[in-house]
Length: 258
Image (cartoon, rainbow, N blue to C red; front, side):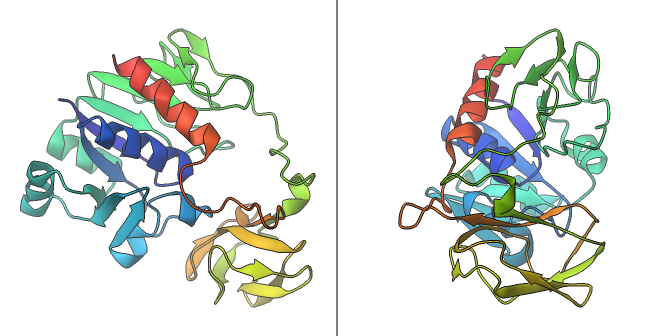
């Protein structure tokens, strides 16, 4: 049984943590105190806000370094979620495996190699054999492919189309500021409806459908960050549970660890 530290509580990081937990590994989920991920119905992100989140019958609970963390790991009934800096967590628990699943496509990640016996990077900007020991492909061309030497595919730039809609399903932050909303994941909204404010400016729904992605209220976001996602496939929307691509990426992580 390995002790695995997963960085990132978005839909991909949560799918990885979920798969590892289901395989009876000791899993710790680490993220910022107020993560800006939008697909909160498809991940454990809300554990960092509400203290607890459930994803497909697995629970993540906010924890802290020290005795509480060790008690949670020994109990094995929930995934501990830590908002400490990842380096502090590594120094405190000495994980066997360190996984960066933050999926920060336009930010160059830190070099992780040497911070654990096995380091794994998910998605663009990681280079296997240099920054990490292994890279897992996250693009729709080959999600979950295990790369032991070299880089993953470059960022495509265009999101998956749902119900015939692509980038127009999303709202990106026009400026930096605090995101405020009274709407909820899964809520039906109409095109042009005011669903949030950012730095006092109204954020309107780009089209009608269910809120698949919605940054948690009170979170400070950067200009250009994804803040809203609409699923227009009424009535066949998919806003809760592990998505197909995160599930395949998680399967790749499990394969890489064997």
